[in-house]
Image (cartoon, rainbow, N blue to C red; front, top):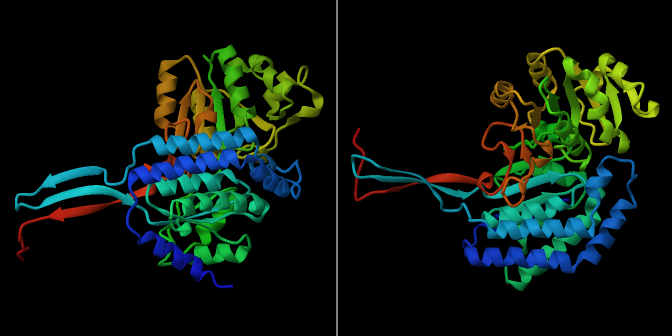
Amino acid sequence: MSYDNYFQNALIAGRKPTLAPALINQVLQDVAAAAIANTAYLLAENQKDLDRMDPADPKYDRLKLTAARIEAIAGDMVNVALLDSPLGKQLSETNMPNGLSITKVRVPLGVVGVIYEARPNVTFDVFALCFKTGNISILKGGSDADFSNRAIISVIHNVLLKHHLDVNIAILLPPEREATAALLAAIGYVDVLIPRGSQSLINFVRDNSKVPVIETGAGIVHTYFDESGDLEKGAEIIANAKTRRVSVCNSLDCLIVHTNRINDLPQLTHILKEKQVELFADDAAYAVLKSGYPENLLHKAKPEHFGTEFLSMKMAIKTVHSFEQALEHIAVNGSKHSEAIISEDAKHIAKFLNDVDAAAVYANVSTAFTDGAQFGLGAEIGISTQKLHARGPMGLDELTSYKWIVKGDGQTRNP
């Protein structure tokens, strides 16, 4: 099967005149309203996907839509509509001695391809952010979520048609793997690819794509409980970071504890015990926890448990003898996504925030906040863990590039 028609339609849609900001915002609000109005339909189609997946699969929670989640997605789209558009924003202006006026302004990336797994919310999020920034979106969802994605794209297309707009502004490719291969090779059609999913998916896209890739990496997330950490504050932060929603990339994977506070582990983990979190503890932590933590939920950690993104009710515990050792453990085992410290030591907090190499670093806050909406971006197209172009939650600004506009009055350049 040839996918050229999909890509050519995307190029044609991208060449049409720029839409007025008021129209863009109205369409986004109308899609948000349509999502809520079609909740029953979206949930019914989503259930078809859920029926094909084992509920024990870590992807199940990401796949699942609920009325509350659809309402939250719609709210994010409204938030995107209310944000100022970055398009045309002047980044710099220089008036040269020769009379040239040179300005640098934000423009769309162009055609944005997004490859994602069982995450139907991504379909709405990508459309909203790309549409707001004048980009064309080509979506390649996983077969696990195909019923959900096709239902969502139909809701979006119906709204576009009501506004007499080209539905190829947002294209959903077929679910088969051949479509992924075509997208990876779409030189001249696609300006950038953004993978969202497991580390294996991200690695595959990075290793095989012939078009530029922005990596939205896996989240191997740590929280370090420092020698001066507040116990009550720490227990709440750790529990929220781990259990709020275990299948997302900002959920906690490894708790690092200073050995001088190791006897506080039972109190630090008491909420985790209530929520049936399975722990993989190093020898020192295991010795403290074994008398009070449920035997079926407590295991001795193996080396592979450190540096693992669990995406489930599982968490590792590592004890360290110093602040520096905690930083070293994060540097070796982290994925540069989100890292946190719980401490009352101002010097340790400042050094942690300055020295830890991650897209988002936290002090006395749950890592659950690594999210575009929580950062005031309206929504996100992913969490970038790389350093070129974008890093952290990718919102509107991150979906733009820039161009130079040069104005003169007959100047010519001499040798």
